[in-house]
Image (cartoon, rainbow, N blue to C red; front, side):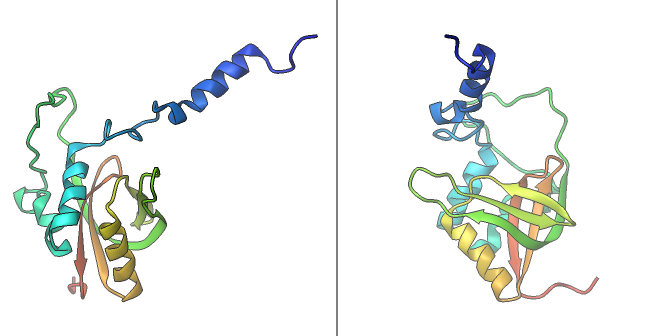
Length: 158
């Protein structure tokens, strides 16, 4: 009697479940996590939230200043372009529970911008800002990944 499940399907399923074996993109022990997000995560635990965006290049014409830490930086890709805009909502903030990476998605200009590995402090601060009617300003790149966040009490008149 033959199995109803084709072997190819089993292989595909095995690959699809690869995240549980640590092959998922960026879900392991820090591999695949962009360096600036590791820095953002560390900053969120050390510094007041207001200064996060300044750390990520708003005053250098939008270019983030990252120092290589022993890993060679890919040279082939073009220089990333950064945008700054106000977030209008938080989509699915997932708190950091043991064994589960935190993740947060913000809605900026009608598009979803991801912050893959926020600290618990960053999540709580952003949720608190929305709850209290403050403004969350987000710097993000062309791949819709968050580069920095700033909380403002009032939005400047344009």
